Length: 76
Image (cartoon, rainbow, N blue to C red; front, top):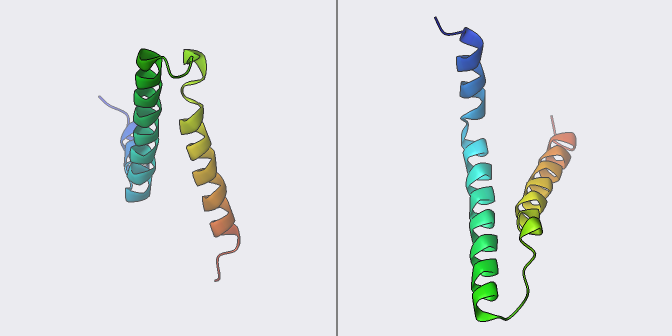
């Protein structure tokens, strides 16, 4: 017997806006990792692999802040 709350939670996450945000974050992570990998192999820059996810986090923060500002100043 599965709880109803899990289904309700998944349906709230699985919206069109959230899918776009997740695709944007995955693209940013993929680009960061590929750029770091190519740079490390070519010897162009020394990559610290601990900070490779910072660009994806910055994109997420920009999306959250822009959504909050848009909702705050939305005309009713």
